[in-house]
Image 1 (cartoon, rainbow, N blue to C red):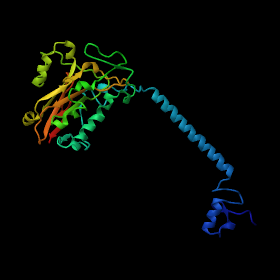
Image 2 (image 1 turned 180 degrees about the horizontal axis):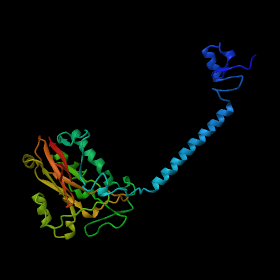
Image 3 (image 1 turned 60 degrees about the vertical axis):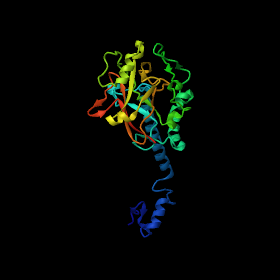
Image 4 (image 1 turned 45 degrees about the vertical axis):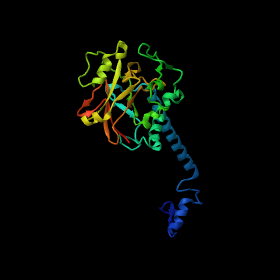
Length: 317
């Protein structure tokens, strides 16, 4: 007796066992007898498709809601972890401009006799200073700019204007003195949210390793407010470098005024700058230069590593 056919291969009964493998696959892809496509009817495929569509849409919605709640806990201007609780820490470093395009290179090599050569360096400085000359390049800068000085710090929500004309001869119009073999290098203090400097505001209590020229400058100050400055100094790293570096001038002053601190990520804020004019460095030799920022809470050495400073090399041809 025949009690019915027996299914033995992907829905094919024994009457179809003699079919070739390719024909069996074709029948599995679409069985015209049952209307199944790959083992399921169209209605079955519609149901499973609807299920997975709803399932994944629910997952996306749940992820979106969680992400929305997460961003509600973040302030776009105030970091969650600050100062000693952050990765940056509480010891700001210095940066310098212009920089070489070569990775990890700190050499500024200028051929003052070649316009094409030194123009590369001047163009980098021009680009760097653009945001200081054109307020519109910095989001939010313009409406909240204030003219600041030691006796008139910025009000709440205001940021201080930086006048590039205060850099004296270190300007684009003077080609930053590159063509005169007396280049200008710009320094800036790295920003740390909420960091407040502790100033060397007592001329009789200055660190022993502070350069004599800077000490003399501080002792000549008559306005006590002007002592509220993060001071800056640059020197040759070795005895020979100190001889080769030649005289220097700092514009507008040898330091960053205290009214620029603390940095609170206000719209339009720009870091203060100091232009170092190396008036007559030795020619055709590499000079190693170390610049330091001076405040009581800036450490220059930690575990044998230089901090609160920046090193670069200068070579004039």
